[in-house]
Image (cartoon, rainbow, N blue to C red; front, side):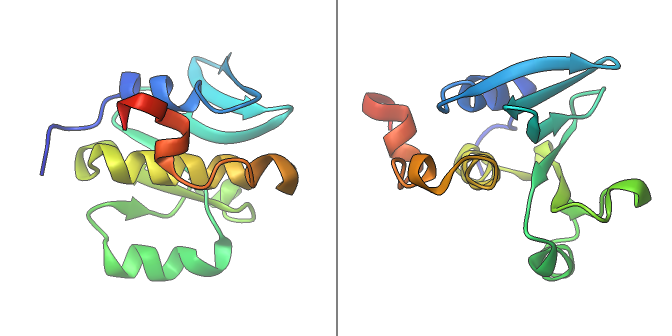
Length: 124
């Protein structure tokens, strides 16, 4: 596996997505589209919460408990999962962030980006 994913990696990728912007809420960095949060970094920047289908959450956690954990109890009602950054490579992080972003944007906008390479352009 390559180097550990950092909060800066998450920020750099998330902010390249159309309509995405960064906010600070109670000392926690969050990325939004409109008023919807699609990524939130933990205060210590060792993990991130991302939009994630509720129906797939338990399977992801069971398959890779070193990587995925349940969100706090108050967030269980949302389509959300917590992910340890140290367990991710850059490609996985980008795919999770892109999928979470797609959950927040109109389908027509989400359809304009098929892959992470579409976001990165020449860097892919």
